[in-house]
Image: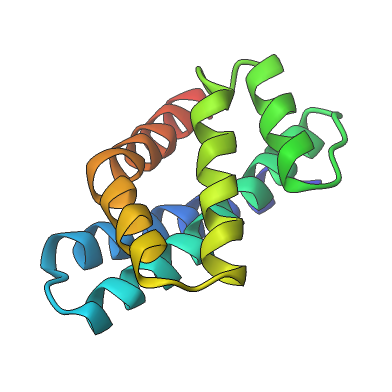
Length: 129
């Protein structure tokens, strides 16, 4: 794994987080909120894959989202793994089960909690490279 691979992954993640921020800030209709949730799902996918690439660069293996989040916490890439595991769970729920109440709850978590955490993670990772 080359360091350039890590920069490419981080750049993709940063763009996804920026896109999610834009969606969160402008979503008013149900359709826009659904689109925001899809961006959230995509961003969480990029997040754990970025952790995987970063950990691999440091010689640490992880094979799935949960293990990559746990290893990122263990290796001090992130400060809190529980909120990211909650985020992962919400991503799984939103991509497999659809009901309006759950959708609204997840959108509100993305808007009120998750987007700020994702932005902080990108900033923190950039500071570590």
